[in-house]
Image 1 (tube, rainbow, N blue to C red):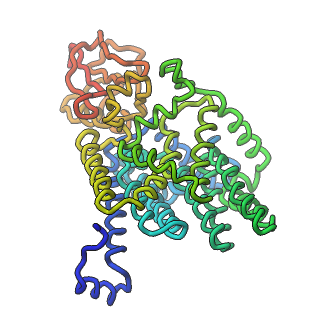
Image 2: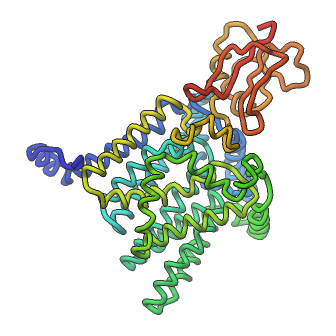
Image 3: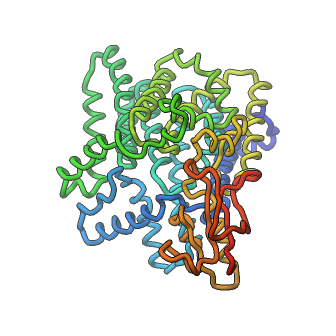
Length: 493
């Protein structure tokens, strides 16, 4: 077994100086090194996702509101994104103090604390899974989280999706530890994590019915109802304390949050891009394209074990509830599937942990090979990943589930910025992802007579690119073998 390989002399050294079992903690260290490595290498020059600049603006306004004690203005967005803005505050202060202006450096500094918070949350996942199930399953879960391609990609974004996903799952795991140990500190910690998840995105409220299942079983066994009230009260208190706008304008904040939750049933109808017969299966279709094929197989094989006990049933119920809620909602955005990943990976890890070592190691090796394939095809933009067994990016475009949220615009901007002459470039789509990396002149589309380059991209509503103003395709960027962003040269280029 891969977990047992160090000799007795080495084990004695580690135990003497660190009082740990090296065969376990060394592997855990390698897994977290892999997790951080895949999320840190090339950070800053990889992608500015489509919403990122807007979140930087909101974080600036959030910090300014704190400085001026205009606390009601800390409510910057309906989602509400408070957790992300709190995490950005120290970085923003440091950047101002040291007058750092180069975008790729500033960009990486904003992303760094996000990734380290996610790593901390993964460690919390690991600890709780060890207590609920066993350490072997927890190690495998952490490994799968470290190498899951699309998860790696979204974790590198400045956005709310990963925070919502990691915080909400940590909250559920803490609650399951409380149910097992009846430790009040885990109950309070779970409420804190849930408050942070809701402060990231209000869709984390979906977790409340899942938590109520745990409380219902506990009440049936113990007859005590006070714990559910304590949980609710602590969640509300943490939500209030960590959201400064609630201190001075709670009625308005709660009203707007309620409106935003109701409004989730409206908005962008992305399912219209897929065949009519699959409209109700938009997220399922996106999920099979975005998840690793090895994980998908393991999850399907492990499903039959979800009814073994309350813990696995609750995790499965969470997946079902998120699926129903997202299907009902009108807003269809591919990255929202990220909330499914921890539950799917946990069920996969539990199944994998019960296999014979030789079979288990084959699956782990296949996961590593899939990661190597992902690096070769998609580096450094892993959010562009689509499963190779379903045809990759080409098939995703054909099925109407391909979405470009800023992928590979940074590479096009960096390419054009290296040209010695001053040039005019027009970017009809993806301007927010292109502009931060671009150092030359940009046209906004009002007068294209002097444009020398046009940067175009594929998307669900642009499955082919035919530029008539600038007909010469000079350079392309994207997954190896199927580019999605193109630099077209005009007559003056």
